[in-house]
Amino acid sequence: MTEQARAAAPGSQPNSHGSQRAATAGVPMTGAQALIRALEESGADTIFGYPGGAILPAYDPLLDSAKLRHILVRHEQGAGHAATGYAQATGRVGVCMATSGPGATNLVTPIADAHMDSVPIVAITGQVNASSIGTDAFQEADICGITMPITKHNFLVTRPEDIARTIAEAFHIAATGRPGPVLVDIAKDAMQATTAFRWPVEMDLPGYRPVSKPHAKQIREAARMIVESRRPVLYVGGGVLKARATAQLRALAELTGAPVVTTLMARGAFPDSHQLHLGMPGMHGTVAAVTALQKSDLIIALGARFDDRVTGKLSSFAPDAKVVHADIDPAEISKNRVADVPIVGDCAEVITDLAVAVRAEHAAGRVGDYAAWWSMLDAWRTKYPLGYETVKGSLAPQFVIERIGKIAGPEAIYTAGVGQHQMWAAQFINYENPGTFLNSGGAGTMGYALPAAMGAKVGRPDTTVWAIDGDGCFQMTNQELATCVINDIPIKVAVINNGTLGMVRQWQTLFYNQRYSNTTLAAGPGIELGGGAEPRRVPDFVKLAEAYGCVGLRCDSPDQVDATIEKAMAINDAPVVVDFVVHQDAMVWPMVPAGVSNDEILAARGQRPDFGDGEE
Ligand SMILES: Cc1ncc(C[n+]2csc(CCOP(=O)(O)OP(=O)(O)O)c2C)c(N)n1
Image (cartoon, rainbow, N blue to C red; front, side):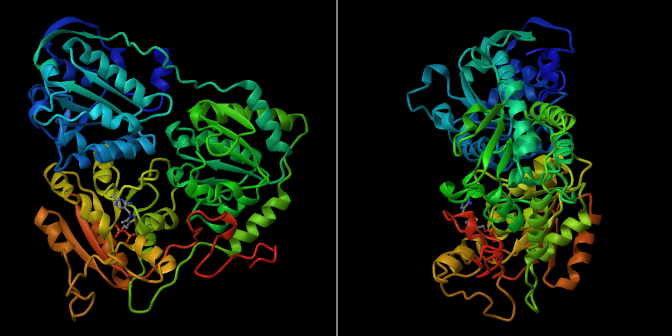
């Protein structure tokens, strides 16, 4: 890869591999010092981490670094998600660090999470001394073995002279091709020994050559199919955001006039306000987006992976559609759905080339005619817009989220936990800009929202960052409020507090005969929910916020929602937690039940849309 190409690669760091600096040749230092220098040279500016015995050598030179800010989290899971949020908000590589054994295993969840969502992070872990590896030494865990299936790549480093090169390789692998997490596990004695630091380094990555330039013949074939199709859909996934190809996408969509759907991982890749946008497909997608894919004759998948939450029952997904599938990772193509035209390449290049090829078709007089298709699509979206019911005397969670989106606006960054509130955050906030909706799509990791918001705010300090969290999710990682307070990271957290594990409760309502086994958070043996005059608050989120040094607010009535959000918006010198006490029986609609054909989509409870096929 050339320096220019590297600089243009997604997630490239400034000064990557020392290209703009004078070379450093053979300066003696410890392995730990070399690690810190290599991180600086790789362009890192922030490390989210937590110390311990095996990583301790690295913490000492960190004190002397003028370029690296270390943020001491309260749990390593927080460090991992913060690195992920930082990376998703900035497009750069996020860095987290932990000690061996339990420190490293606490990173497993966020590493798996970053892997599922293709987020470039570098996780550095201390390991026991090289000679002790394999002896069940104190705090030894085979973290390379453990994370083998959930990292893009991992390294065990036992020699001080390998540290700098490995860090350069880790950044390069994390950020190029299909991005992903890379773990570097470094033996303590390698950090303590002396080495000669050199930079830039010669990378040694035989066989690692991600293809970014698509094949011209495939592009021409795809363009021909686009103009010949009658019911095309641009199925846009997170890869378009990773490739920073949103401007190119807009140009292609407007050139072809084809409808666009954006997956949960691609919200913000195409403006929600755009006429060609049908919204999100999938289990809780819009009727128009789900049905457009289902009845399409040509799906143009761009950086998307035909996830089961999008396809529903795979064998009945989009039965009449031909598929053009563009992805930088060849392993994705034809993995779930056979592609008629496979295109391996970076989405920015693929979409640019596709637009050129479509223009050539147009110039030759071949233009797609989608008028009949659009009249169907328009009918579906007019008849089945997203909506929700309000129950008199209680607060609708969707309303809260909608108002946060309206008041904070499309320039803000929103993170979400996992559950109903996540789906409502995807549905009821209008995303106009890339990198403004961060969530755990592939893994569905409860606890993601707050630390990810923290990382996003560190990476984009001038941007308002709202974590939209569930009361269940919030209780998994809220200890990072302490990190936010101490490090001046003024995020805003909206706890959508329905007193239950709402999404699981929704499934119990629909599929388990309303038998609510272990999903009510605020109740328990001898404690009835809502039994007394004052609701039982365990914990009281306002007091919890205040105990951490945050501002705590509560809102339980619709007419106070705007004023409460505005109050939170006006506080910029401390994190704010708002306890929105909402109705507990609200449900996420539309819904395609798991494992069922997308033809069975329900617009609302018991309401099957009328597609004019007599199956209402
Ligand atoms: C770590 C983890 N454990 C369990 C689950 C399963 N799960 C998915 S959604 C959900 C409920 C989330 O509840 P809450 O945070 O209150 O959000 P709500 O659905 O009520 O909006 C659970 C338990 C998960 N996704 N992640």
